[in-house]
Length: 272
Image 1 (cartoon, rainbow, N blue to C red):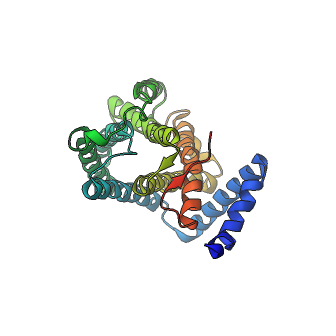
Image 2: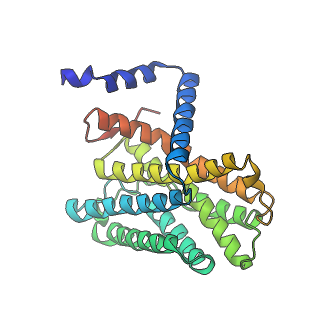
Image 3: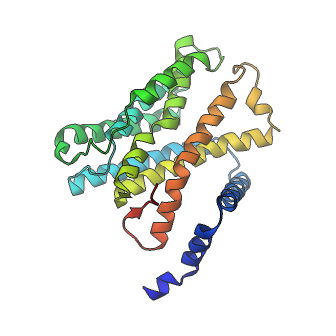
């Protein structure tokens, strides 16, 4: 235990914790930029970021399935986040099948099936272990604004009008779908390991997705944001949605890494 407290990793986290918010923000931005630069150099085909993002989401959902199957409890899981995830995955699978029909369609369909199984387990098999009093963020707070925004701002392509609106809707809804889970974690002040692994996987998935957009913008000197035929502000809005979700999950990922480095099984969150 003594060695763990005096380890370089703990000293680093302790030093970061003592810094002002401005210094922490600077360190976070610097870390993100360095990570993006490394990914740009290592990964030649940037479309692989989306495949890796979706594969990471699948892996995170498999972790949830393992938790439910072995521990027979859904404590700490947000049913509302799973339902929002199922909604945007169902819409994205339809759009992907109608507009592209590639590896993304397969990965989205697999994640949708796994997510529906998780919802079934929470609603029926493990209902007694679900904590609705902690999972108290109403779904319509996210669905309605995303639906309205998708009607106003969506891609201007050659696909069917409804498909374009649905595609925008799933992009916006995905960016906020994790909020009920984070609200539940905030209410509980602590999250058990398997749920933490799942949320961390979502954070990694969103970072990879956001990395694709950021690198494309950099490589085109910003022109990628305003490509002809994509709508006046569709791409900037989609990028903003990716950035929002990435930063929403960044705080949790910080505490997750800190807890793992400290050898803790439970992720403790700072009081709010």
